[in-house]
Length: 95
Image (cartoon, rainbow, N blue to C red; front, side):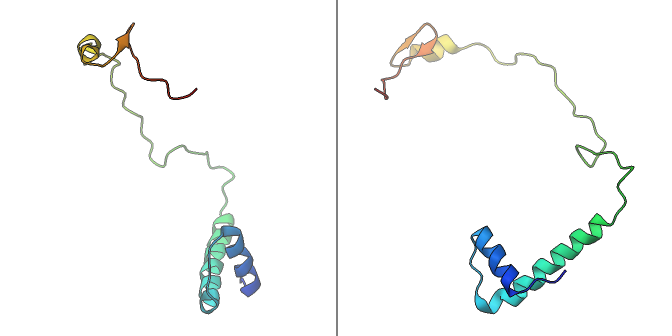
């Protein structure tokens, strides 16, 4: 598929990018090559291809859900300017 100056100007306006007049032909050629590649990919028979979530057939290794750190919230809140019931108190910023 070959794009012309009008199509490139329209696409550049939709994409909100500036294309100089002397670059229109070059951009048109590159966009045409991309569209040709899509046409080639569209011609491939994918009727019997199962969709994949990932190109590699691997299983995610999961670690056990175990607590690895000690609870230090009381120690950390002891140095806070203001804390109550396990929460940090901060000045009100919204009226």
